Image (cartoon, rainbow, N blue to C red; front, side):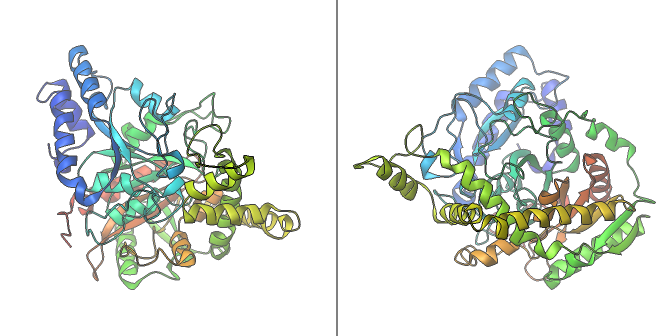
Length: 490
């Protein structure tokens, strides 16, 4: 099975018409993963026995002609709960955690007949931009095994880029879907905050986290997102808004003529020259198709990263206090008293980056510093959202680079937290404002041959316009058709 040469629609037709069975497809998927994953290291846990059993059941019942993912193998990021399948958040503290229920997004996929092949690697508790913060191992970029895949959804992005699966679930708190998508040359969508239920997602920053997909194509992404979107009674932050059929509506999107696109000048301030070249060419291409390109300003962009790391870390310090060595998860041995249980279990169970953010968040929320840090950051968040609102009064979309650079070498930035945090400078403002945003393959660096992503930002709950523009760009270029040869085609 070559996932580079197919998509969900073609695969579904082949399954329905019995050109291939779900069992054969699932076996071929695991064969591919086993052949490549020693190099890529995208997966933390494989679900082979249960997946093969489920495939056989689907074959016996017959692949549903109405469900595009019926019998299709997909992957799930390992901070999304899967009943009976180990979920670790790539942390020692949850190394042997076995959930007793499925996250809502997994439940909806199960109802649609998908086959879960396994759980993908990530930065511990989704805190990182390179997947180097995993407690178990670093995932490698399929385009160049010496480079990072981005983070925190690096395992999901690498699994798609390596041709293991057509799609993998990720989560995005400050760019954790879009940055890996850019680094790996795949499509990554962060829907509007509230569009997708967070029930069953291991929380990092509750007012920022959102679930989305990494896929090879825009249309596959649109279809898969529609499967998991919609209101959920378990999540009071999930929206009541109706979920459109984004994939079906793409068929009516053949042009961007007349689309008003804003390009913030701040999004070009610190771009590497090779990334600047690719993004400029992408904008020129869209302009040649009839889009109207305007330069605008988002003046509070420069405050996005510091404000985000105060707010998200504050929420993390609250969310992670549940890991106390008492109820579940890792517990230190030979403890002397209750305080020893708490301190040693957390000291031994959490990694350095997680502890760093807990300390930052706890400090920001502490008496005497709340107004100086947390409260001020919250005000900046509102100003950033207002900047977007002002631009969207006259424009349909905002475009720019997903990341200021291409994927960097493994080990190059892991010891410099400030430099690592600044990788998210172009993605975190979107999460601060709760907006939908997608990264699509826009070309390759002239310097190192690595993929570059174009970020498309839309109005709240206007995923359709994002998908339409991304689809037109994809259909009039061939970047999404490129595939890595492990070790680097570049």
